[in-house]
Image (tube, rainbow, N blue to C red; front, side):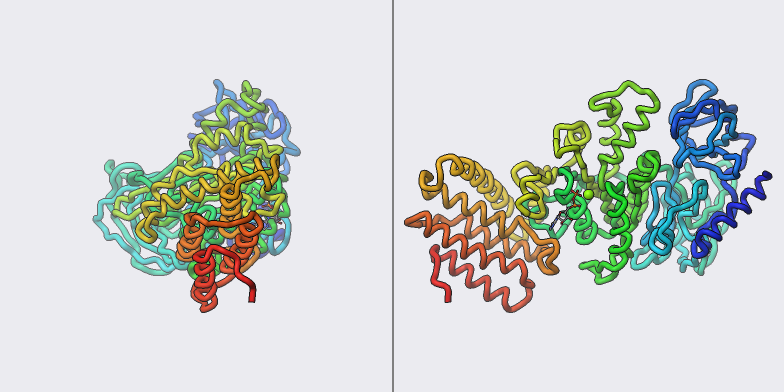
Length: 623
Ligand SMILES: Nc1ncnc2c1ncn2[C@@H]1O[C@H](COP(=O)(O)OP(=O)(O)O)[C@@H](O)[C@H]1O
Ligand SMILES: [Mg+2]
């Protein structure tokens, strides 16, 4: 079938399957064979891994298309080149692939399409927009159909910020577009190396992402045209500017994180935990409440249903910082375990590339991946097919370096215009059986800045969020304390005391289990009760209560100051019972504060009552 007809057929298919996708669908078939690009044919097939004999120049990571007899073109990526044969990995189901099938190479790496319109989008790992399909029609893309990531027809209000004659380089601002409430900078493409002189510039106006908004000549006098969209290869980090140290706290509204195990904007953290311990609930919480501009949520789902939940729930959630719907600041990359492994592998890179793109605009971005274990499994499967020498638990030997280079894409960047942007990366890890000794967890732990370990023990006793304070750690304590000391004197020391109390309380609890409470000296019982109070009242939080789910930092400062009074006070009780009764009462009173708004009148009254209780140091008769 001639190429034109194929393209037409594809268009018809697209229109039939999803008329509302109209605006997105390809106007042209994907890459045609090109004299300077390599081409070849399939000589061996093994699952999604094909061996292709080719002619021409070929690069590692290049995108290829396998042309099926029925007219569909399957997207693939070059993963190994040896002489005139290459191994390519197909991103889709390979039914119908046979020896001798023609393969063309695009001459391009796997890329993300970047420009206004990314926010609110839901993509798969190859950046096909899924939202319209999944939510409205409940089905997935037919095989071999690739859809433009950005709406080609949508008009944007473009404000020009450059003039003819300007000397520019990659990353420089040509103009801006208002994307929701964000100023989206239209930049000189990152593929443009060297210096350029602008020769033509459109006036401010209403344009699509495809419109040429500026023309420029390079140092050799060759002319280039710039549009509002650009493409970044997804597998390596890209930024323009200088890396600087993280210095601002990422507020999450979760007390156990912000207070006890803080994370900095531009930092990294991981949250490993056994199945059902609350990793996904935690990631969703962070995507809703974290104090960042933009959230990129990569769902390499454990269950397909989970992903659908995200799609259903997200558009309706309200951002506590702006009172707008959360989707206006979110990009979701969705892969379920039913999607091909290779697409799962690319989803994480797709997500982090989009995050880096928004960082380049001076924004704070949070990238969340749930779970990176699924991604590592994809690496393992691919490596297995390549018959590479396996490392621990059959993961490839390069697992640790892949994990490290993913997290290394986080960070604060001082942009050339003096502003700062950040990418914070948080990955859930789901080790089989909750065993943290396995390779993915271990490799992750050696690169991240904070470890929020979820434990079965805590989730079983419904101590949510099930982040276990006895195993978790953060390297950002001193940075966070530096920021918070200015608001609450002695913050850092207090956090250390709280953790010490928890550890001592745990040791005493274990001893009491053996010798009984009667055999334990009263001071120890009190330490144990203090630890329990801190855990119950402060560290635990009810994700399903509107007031308690999100505890803003100023409320944390108030509550922690109360906790401080309890932890620092030396109580004198006569009997164990007296101590228990007192702490039970105090605990209940303090827990109530969590459900009260900081600004309500009740809050201050309740707080005064608690302060009096602590002061008196004994249980009072309930009135
Ligand atoms: N913070 C929380 N508050 C209340 N319930 C929670 C919380 N976190 C998890 N859960 C409960 O645990 C269940 C499993 O959580 P989920 O995040 O799906 O686990 P995982 O992703 O670790 O497998 C949830 O459906 C919910 O009932
Ligand atoms: Mg989960």
